[in-house]
Length: 232
Image (cartoon, rainbow, N blue to C red; front, side):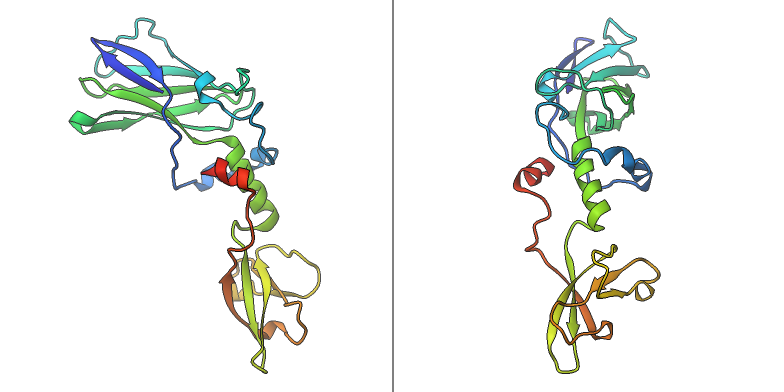
């Protein structure tokens, strides 16, 4: 969403594009369990559809602001069918900027857990700034990551290379979970006390003491094609 200040008034124009951000804090992950129910994509029902979502200014019906005023927005998310979403969990950012002055400031967003969010930002300078709201993380994308991590322990497949006394090499899958009950090597003590296991290669003739090195395996698909498109 973009708000443009023109002749002392702010007009809501449109939603901003989706932005990618690189950090997701430990505090955020405290609430990961709420995202475990999002195991698939439902483009008609649960996913946010920004063109049909609404934003309105509250507590100031005149929409006229001066420096130091607090600007409060009510954000109501809808799906593609136009229905109001009934769950929270989406991560929304709000910020104000004015390119000509090189000025910018960030606000904060309160999630009411029912598809309604309150965005708050302070007018810090005089001019014609833009206020933008963007979706940084959709709850479904968090759910895809959380469920995958919960099941496999990592997003990328890692394998351990084993090399025996005869010079033969083979690979076994590694991770923080024991994916099988047999032929497991526990390397937790070697990993500074953090959980780490590798399965022995299917090829006979190898023991845990033959572990040689880790290697990434990018040939194993992490997500389906549609999920990859969604997560971009």
